[in-house]
Image (tube, rainbow, N blue to C red):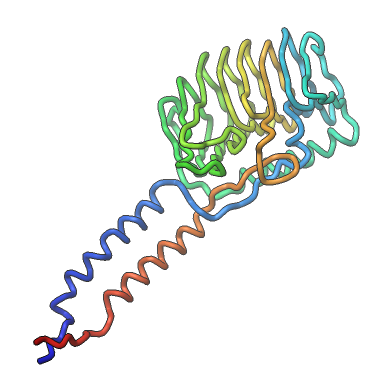
Length: 285
């Protein structure tokens, strides 16, 4: 005899949708997305320090990467500051001008990325963040240690959109776990950034106005790039990251939500189609 297997087995079939539903929810809530929007620093990626008005330095700052200013011309404090790796100082001129143009493009690219997590009013210190785009409608503060978790993907990217200023308390730090990389971190700052004394910062600082590094602050695998104002240093260490991807001047792939949204919808459709299969007949002895 034949037995119809259909509605009576539906509860069993729908239980198979539960793991899929959990997966879809996780994709939308984690802040980690699969589609990418390229952030390319262009020739600005060749600079460890780039300013719009002036570059100033006090003390034995060590820089790995080019130093430039445009449209301003003033660069002071070299020496005692030193530039390693066969890099060059560019005071105005075509190279610095092009770097500023590329910086503006990169700045606007980061500023225009879709925000996946609003952190306005929250201190970055003590938080562990996954790849994604994080935004502050006003200022941002780092007191203590911010941990960035790459989820095992060395290409994972972290974007920070900051409406006004970025400030760090003394001895603050940015740390990395699970293959997160400094070169894939971008800080778009709507006014000025100040790194407090002995702050161990990381990533690419793209400031509309100015950047100040207080005594002993460092930028590991990162850049201090100011569009209109000055970059001021005091016994600091700044080194660009040679392993950055996404363009000849360094950059990264920035998370966008679109692809995982499509993936989530596809998983749900697959599960529903599976659950709605026509009843089948099983021949029983």
